[in-house]
Amino acid sequence: MWKAKEHNGSHGGLDTGPPMPSLTRAARPARPPDDDRRTDLERRVLGALEQLLAEGIPFTEIAVQRIATAAGIARSTFYRYFPDKSQLLIRMAELATTDLFGAAELWWRADHTDEQAGVVVAMRAMITGFREHRYLLLALSEVSAYDRDVGAYWRARVAMFLGLVRERLEADKRTGQVSAELDAAATALVLASMVERTIAVNFSAAAPVADEVLAEALGRAIWLTVYGDAPA
Image 1 (cartoon, rainbow, N blue to C red):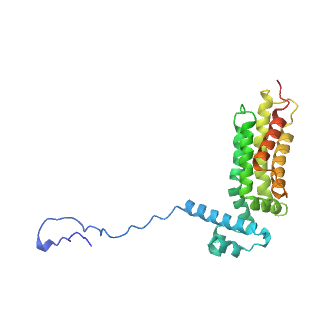
Image 2: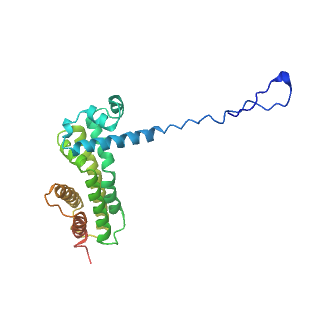
Image 3: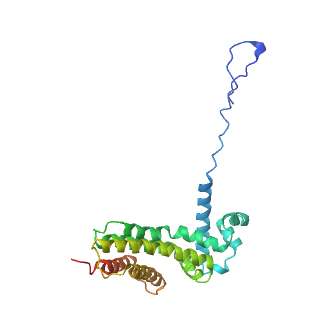
């Protein structure tokens, strides 16, 4: 092991400064930031929860200890991040629905000169997102019907999306891009409900429609509902 010689004032010689550190000492790896650790833990918990749900275990019957064990964390660590199972489901839903809503929200904010192509892309992304997280989303739909916190979260998330669609439709009415007879609030509700129920029912069907065919059909239905009777 190479080391610089220590300077001893009684023996004379040049002052080489403080001792050099050992070149063989391994540097400690930097600890990841808190946000990175939280993101990693949440993704592990999401994967563990979805796996348990995929096995057919109802969400209400999955014990916290079982989720923690499947995720490879301690029960105490679980409660540090999730005070209870309601908050767990809410946070997992936030992760799972990011892509689900994101593609649709992007289309509603975009320029619609591409006719049906853009909305079909958005529907394809929603179907893909639902397929990836279908067990969690089905649990979310069930639990939101009777859990106050989960229900409040889901209603608020859907209301946010409906608000975006309604505002876009009202703006298009003002510029004459859609029919003056179109009711923005009612149309937003119809479209959102149609998409959600169509995808959910198709995933539970004995002979489901292929994803691409379903995306095309939903895209066509949305486009015609919004722009089918627009002024020439």
